[in-house]
Amino acid sequence: MSKLVTGIIQPHRLDDVKSALEAAGIRGMTVSEASGYGRQKGHTEVYRGAEYTVDLVPKVRVEILVADEDAPSIVDVVVGAAQTGKIGDGKVWVVPVDDVARVRTGERGDAAL
Amino acid sequence: MDWDTGNAAWMLMSASLVLLMTPGLAFFYGGMVRGKSVLNMMMMSFGAIGVVGVIYVLWGWSMSYGADVGGVFGNPFDQFGLSGTLSVDGAPVPGLGNYPQAIDVAFQVTFAIITVALISGALADRTRFGTWLVFAGAWATLVYFPMAHMVWGGGLLSGAENGLAAKIFGVTDGAATVAPIDFAGGTVVHINAGVAALVLALIIGKRKGFGKEPMRPHNLPFVMLGAALLWFGWFGFNAGSAFAADATAGLAWVNTTAATCAAMLGWLATERIRDGHATSLGAASGVVAGLVAITPAAGAMNPVTSLVLGAVAGVLSALAVGLKYRFGYDDSLDVVGVHLVSGFWGTIGIGLLGDNVGLFLGGGGKQFVIQLVIALAAIIFSGVLTLIIGSILKATMGWRITEEVEVGGIDLAEHGESAYETISAGSIIKEVRA
Image (cartoon, rainbow over all chains, first blue to last red; front, side):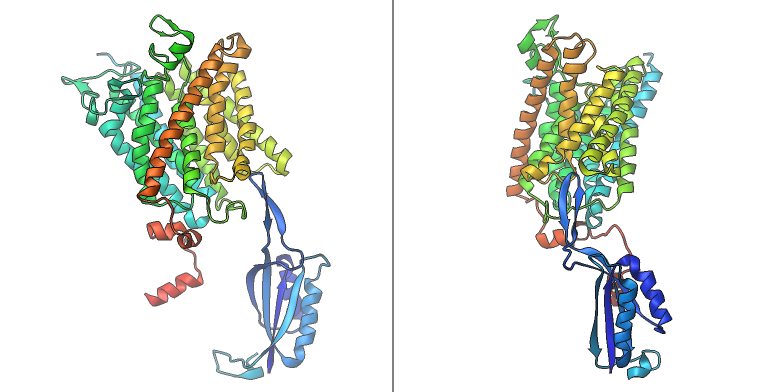
């Protein structure tokens, strides 16, 4: 079994998260742009003198496939690198992954990580 | 006949400059909409060029400057297809500034084109292109040409003996004692287009999400490029309205620049105080507000009063764009806030600040009264007729695209194109299918 660690983080923390994961021996990840909101509920912006509430704030999603036993420490690495202590820092979660295959070789399970 | 080739050269140049304003407007408006509907926005300006350019040759000139019918419009059949306009018995007909009249036709058609195109800013993102083209032809015919005739062709809103102004303060030597002043089209172009934009915005209704999401411009450099092209072209608009390469043209050029610079600063200062930022969108909008305000007044001001007129225009228009949120009409790109408000201000501002005619410059209040009456008469005329044309089109062709198309983007649905082909999952999948 493997685990998928997904982190939704502040865009300006991406570089630090990436370096920290590399230092922790992680060799691959998927990064995508995301937008959303949590407890902070977005922000207001002014356009042409009218104020708007913008709920969806730009975020970055980082996804890492890891072996079961590595998941808790990788969560700590992401949280440690992404944390600023301010509202809107994001979330990290872990979900089980039934199977993993490496497309190039056809390897399965932990060998494909 | 000995033509004044200096005048002829300047007026041909001016006509070309004014024609450039409409593609410039396409960039100004195109940058202000969202990326999914920029082509439709630009096409509304280009469409106006096509439709109005054709009908101007056929009956537009004749309805503007042909034989008078009741002081309201010219007989469309009088000079249909420009017959008898360019030459009579093989000799060129003289125009206003001792040059061939063909040059006057060239200059005037460009005004009709830009006026129609200006209206489209109120209709962004949600209007069927076919309905817009039909409207462009109908509105030019029933509203623009009559308005041009009434103000510039010796009709009811001019200083003619049978005009409105003559009825108020009397007649001297066969013309109104206090004649209305509309140097380059504050009434015919800006009030006219601004009112039409307001009426159509009300008829067509709001964009989905209006007032809830900001709908920010997708390309502000386009907006600034468009404003720059408009400013450049506006020198033909205003300085060309002297109909000669002379001192009045020079004064109009200087006044146009003075008012525009002051208006930009006025708009930026208003934004900085109200919102905390002086924006590029504000600079571009302020430029246009200043150009609009000085249009009717470019020959009636001095450069210092032009600064005052422009600065007030910038502040007024910057404040006026907020009205649409308060009253809930979706004048998408602020045609009402910029063209109607600054056009109205420039028109009545002559009555306050005009050299020797303004209330504050020793002219008494008569000019102010005349300017106000003409402006209000133009608002009523344009408003009522646009309401009729817009309502008939709503009941027959329909104005709105479907909500599904509006959310997905009008460009692809109406024109089969999208402005920006980027490498995305969508385009890769399309390639695989092909």
